[in-house]
Structure formats: C-alpha cells, structure tokens
Image (cartoon, rainbow, N blue to C red; front, side, top):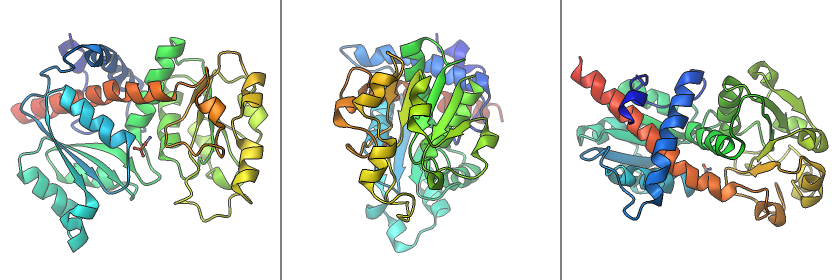
Length: 319
Ligand code: CP
C-alpha cells in the first residue's frame, strides 16, 4: 500500500518545505492519510520501522513536537532515544557535528533535531549518512508543523488549492509561518499575513503572500486563520507597546470570529498565549481545530519518518 507511494520520495532528510516540490508535499500528506488510522487501532503499532533507531535531539524546549515525534516513531515500531541539550556533552563544548557523528556511530538511523540556529539541521544532514529531520531551526523552518497544518486543512475543507488562509501574529520570528507559506503557496492557497509592521519581515511579499496590518481585513474572506504565538523570548520588546495593546488590535476574539465566514477554521501551532493571541473562548470554541492539529501531527510525522528511512535505505543498498 505504502510502497507505491514512497517510490517517488528520494530524500534522506527533511529540512524544509522551500526545496520540496508540490508533488513531494502531496506525497507526504497522502502517506500520512494511510498512517492516520493506525492511531485508532487497539494496538497502535505497525512494523514499518522495526529495527530502526530514532534519536530526538532537542536544543530548545518543546512539548508537542518532541512527544509527537516520539509517539510517531514508536507507532512505527522504532526504538527511540531522547537527548536534551542540558543533559548532554554539548554543555562541555562539543560541536554540533561531533555530537551528530557520535550519535551516528551508535548506528542510529534518524536524528530529529530542534535547534535555535537557522540552518543547523541542514549542516547536520550534509555531514551525516543518517537521516536528519528538522523539528524547527531558529527562525528558518518547522516543516512538520506546516505539513500537519496542511493535513488538517485538507481533512477539514477537502482541498487546499484556492483556499484563503490568513496567518496572524509574529511572522518575523516564526519558522512556522515560513514553512506554512512555502507549503500553502505551492499547493495553490491564497495566503495573507497579518501583523504589526515590526513583526512582518522585509520582502515577505516575494514569497507570494498578501500583507495586511488590519485584522478585520485578514479575517474577512478567510477559510482558515492560523494564529501564531508571540515569541517573547525572541522579540526585543519594541514590536508593540504592550500585550494588551496587541490583543486589542490583533487578538482573535469571538466578536471577530462572528464577523468572519461562518465555518472559518481557527488553528494555532501551540503553545498558546491565551488572552494575547486569542481569547480562551475561541481557542476552546467550535471553530478551533487546535487539538486536531496535535493528533494529526502523529500521522504526518509517521509519514516523514517512514519516507526518509526508506529513501536512506534505498541509497545505501544501491551505492
Ligand atoms: N508547535 C510546536 O512546535 O510546539 P512545541 O514547541 O511544544 O514543540
């Protein structure tokens, strides 16, 4: 069933959506559809990665992504090891490449990495034979988050082509925004980004999006709104006068949702700052698919792990 799908996937790593084709993105989404059902079984396991070892190497905090990758790998029957940078030899000055090569020397097949530097996953991937999956690198990309967002959109609305998707919030510091824009534009969605001027990066329009600073404008025709977290840890504090000010001008409230399309989908990659990006009654309300996004993350990450492992095995056998 999955073998015929994976025949078109040749990459040993998943680093970004910028360099994927529309067909490759669609292949990940269709492979994820076949894996989604596994999590509904009484025994939530398939043997696809039996005998493979997966390492979660996280240099930044994470709840959803780390656990989701671990669950995905275990549902594929892989062995999983979690390494947090605070408890590793990174603290003793070991370089990223040395850390990667030492993990690889343990005959690890896939390294899933979150790092605060943009480009860190690409550096590791270039230096290792093991597969590398980017779980978020600095401001650059968070490809599996965007893939699970697109999977959820497709599941809810049936298609992505032609959809009006608004991304609201801290676009400047957001790897989630960048991955979503690359993916959604390739799949034919019309993307609008909405934020205060200081939180919109220069030349973002070159990525094929419309820019607005007016939240009513962003919500007017939107089929879905993806609300981003305010990244206080990355912001210098000069983007807007106060959190209350931000909520008044850009916060997603039930009043604003009532004026939008009736079935508008409200998304958020998490973690949510309630009362800053969105009110609790929207986060927990009927238009929200936030927890469904989390559930879909498992199927999408199963698909990614499966595809990169197969491609890597193929390359090794045919060298
Ligand atoms: N969406 C996301 O990346 O969440 P975590 O930081 O909890 O992994």
